[in-house]
Length: 285
Ligand SMILES: Nc1ncnc2c1ncn2[C@@H]1O[C@H](COP(=O)(O)OP(=O)(O)OP(=O)(O)O)[C@@H](O)[C@H]1O
Image 1 (spheres, protein in one colour):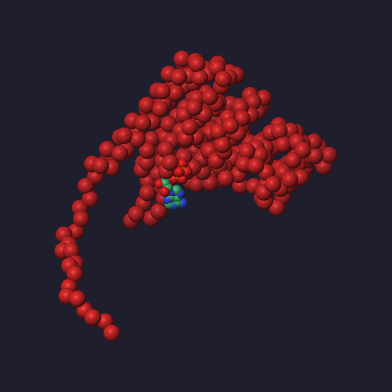
Image 2 (cartoon, protein in one colour):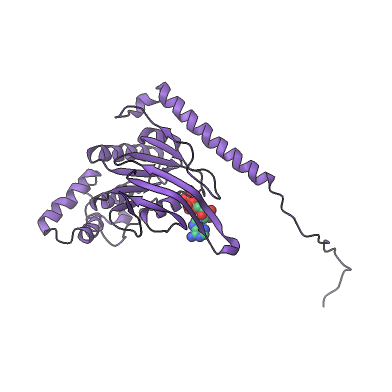
């Protein structure tokens, strides 16, 4: 059994009368310490997938397992970094991490806790900003804080829900490198959601596309065998990188075309109504 598993999951939103089926028979297996990127179009179910893996939502059918145990509820063993940071605005950088650390390691002594928190602040290069509030940080700094806070809880599985999509291109590539550096220093199982093929190829061990909804599932897998560390400056000239990027992009475009043709082939029966025609002119007043 793989470390993180989504096993034949069906999941939908809404009552039976107008239900939206997000997943049908969706399965995914991630090995321990593997870095998997799930790539998909907007609305295909990427955030729903993260919520199911994190135990925030329960499958209608099938199960989610981590290390052989059924995921029944959220917990600090499953660390989630969301796109929108979800930081507490009234607490400083230090305070946001401290709150998480106190919850997960309540018996940690004060001095040890201070060093522990500083270690994570340093890890994401936020030294010097310890006492700033989230509102005083840039987008990239907020996302680094969000990552540090999640990592400080020592989750077994790290779920990254499009953590970089709100950032500008330069900050985004800088943070991609930083996440990989941290992951290489302290390996753990990572599932990252992205809508960017290049990001997936640069960062992941394996890319798994999500098909278009409704009733999406995880499609054909693309292993990334490019050696690490991956240097983005030279990757652009690497034929293996270019080939894989093209292959994944083609696959995604085909998914899009298939979804469009399905939509076109649906004929909606409209009621046979007579149009309302304008009547004689009436003078008011
Ligand atoms: N709480 C909800 N109630 C009803 N439908 C929902 C709810 N949350 C999501 N959906 C629907 O489920 C589908 C998948 O949503 P989800 O947010 O997982 O997509 P996504 O791939 O993360 O999209 P994006 O990339 O735009 O954030 C969408 O059609 C969405 O409208």
